[in-house]
Amino acid sequence: MKEAGFYISMQNKVKCVLCPHTCVLEEGQIGLCRVRQNLEGKLFSLSYGMVSAMHVDPIEKKPLYHFLPGSKSFSISTNGCVLSCLNCQNWQISQNAVDEYSAQKLAPESIVKIALDTNCESISYTYTDPVVYYEFMLDVAKNAKYHGIRNVLVSSGYINPKPLKKMLPYLDGANIDLKSFDDKTYHKLNGGSLKPVLKTLQLINDSEAWLEITNLIIPGWTDDIKMIEKMSSWLVKEGFGKVPLHFSRFVPTYRLPDINWTPLEVLLKARQIAEEVGMKYVYLGNVHKQNVTTTFCPNCKTEIINRDGVIRMSKLRSDGYCLICGERIDGVWQCKY
Image 1: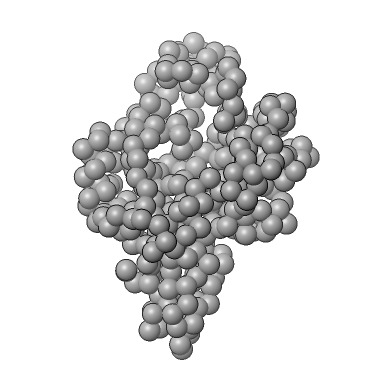
Image 2 (image 1 turned 30 degrees about the horizontal axis):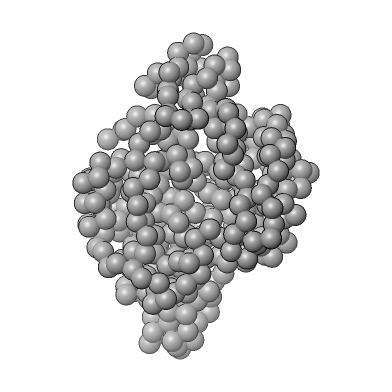
């Protein structure tokens, strides 16, 4: 355990202000995240260093398509989550407390050493929502930055502005799940709300960190074309036009096992709408179809990066410019350390 940051003492209670739930906890009580507890008037992170998942992944799996393509990222997680999504793919660890799923105790320095030993250019905080292991993530990120390793946040973005701002100087890349563009859907499907996620997107987009956005299209939940158009138009209007947008295909899972896979035509329509309103880079995930993960130059339409098999960057200069027309392709294309 480690004493948590971002809480307020209230006599025998504590108020956690890490995420928008702002849980008020009595003595011994654990928050909605399942991993933060009031012990003798102090808030503790029960998941500090308790790593329940770690793998070496391609950075494209996050998904990040415009951030060091072809590189490896050491990915870690603990138990717990700030949300309770009905469609969670990692529910075994996200919806369980620390003592309900096996975990390995590791120090921040150990995580960084493994990343170095496996030749990973970044560490990704992912699988569940890293907001719940904020203190551990921050300590790892500081150590990683010192050793020249990038830090990547893969999150629902359900975090309050103050802790996010403290984390931003150590972040190099992020993929944020914009789960829908309707507050009622957020409450029913994810156990959260929309507005804090939009604030997170704006703060990251205004920082030095590279940002990409994922929107999972679930039939009957988030597949309304008018809502997708509204979301895409808002993104363009608010300055996210150059941010890669990933429309991901739903696969039946967890508490939504009877909903079918997202029809391909819905995903293609979503991509068409997003491109028409001004999103420069739009991709489809969990789809086996040619060119839906390919990066094209937004100016001359030349194929820049092909991800259909082995990643090929045939028309991209090492500094991120199209070899054909000289257009700048937005992204992080080489190590800055």
